[in-house]
Length: 325
Image (cartoon, rainbow, N blue to C red; front, side, top):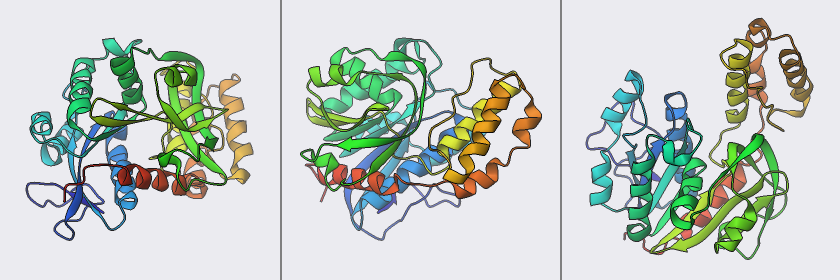
């Protein structure tokens, strides 16, 4: 159960959040570095998984974002109202730290405007935070900082829902029997063999998308890296695709959009594939995209990774060695 840490209760505060109903077992810092268009959605997705994964136990969550990420007026106002300065994080180390992904705008991680801040955060956390969960770009950054491993640019975007193989001997994969799937959406990757050579365990991986979850201890911290996006909602991949194909059809970008695999209900797949074929095959017409019933497809979109996602977070929190009570 998430207990959102705000100095004063406010209308419109991020949710889920409960105040004063349960004594927190863990303290958590959530560092949200997603761009403005996905900022609120990402915040809600991670809070939701924390809320369900913690069960009846309390998680006292404080929200942060790194100053190097450019913000517009609306998101800047939200940050001013509900987010805490990064200096507070260093002064009050949490039991668990979550760092979201970020929008990659430079060819190398070191050239990103927030790189120095991210390196400082990860280095500090390895010696002060019992457990951290790092998503997507943040996971690749950790591999560079802790292990000197560079990410590799993929020839085409990895986007879709992929069947996973779980290692039953790994605590993070406990209870994940049967058919497990997880979504991926990324332009870069790090080979599984590079992780294993650096001492990482890989509880979840896929032949279609490579590793999804990797973990090892770094200094005082149990580090969990995610290339998959268990926090995604049922429409996340479809909305990303709608954004990309709209930009392509409107000549805002010339890179061909990638159609995510298994992002719709089975009965909607053919229609989406036909739209993709028409727009990328020459009929680069914005009207085709604007007239397509994306809203109807979103209403029917399945969520087959939901159980696995909540189990993963339950397992992660259960493994934290230093509860606050």
